[in-house]
Amino acid sequence: MGEHKLIITPKTKVGELLDSYPQLESLLIDMTPAFSKLKHPVLRKTIAKVATLQQAAGAGNVNINELVLRLRKAVGQEDELGISTDNQDYMSAVIPEWYHPELVSIRFNAVDIINRGESPMNEIIALAQKLDGHQIMELKTPFVPVPIIDMLRKKGFSTFSRNDGDTIMSYIKRE
Image (cartoon, rainbow, N blue to C red; front, top):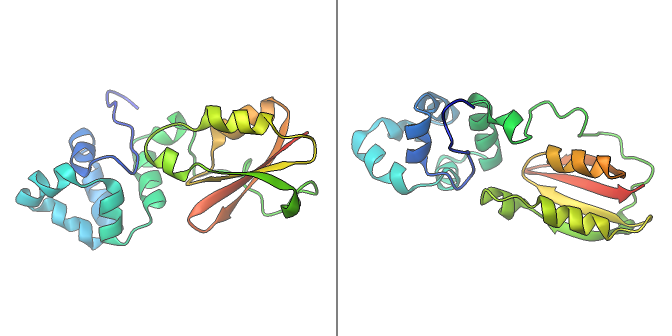
């Protein structure tokens, strides 16, 4: 990631983002014409200092998860954060034999936690440890939670993930 320390999340202020990564201005503008207002010096000094990427995405009618992933990828954060656009080992179009919706006993929505820039890993691992051999945990995230899935697999859990529109649904079962 180089000298920059700013981790890009939906709560990142647009001004902070562009101060740390000025090269991302053109990427933002390419994503939607609404972001071209960032070139206006007054708006750049005022609105960009208080507006988050979440707010800017809403104003520009852009999917926040796609926006954050594209920005992270542009500055090389996808590997650091365990986010990748190549999720072939994690995403599956084929539903495994062990998955049955009626066996989902734990549902955990980690979208808000992740969007705040926090990690839900410890809570997810603790919940997964409560599963017996038949129960399944459903995990909702804004992107494929690669580090969490890797850790669970090392602990002997089976997982599969699927795209559910704006979120990723991952299913976890003790082997």
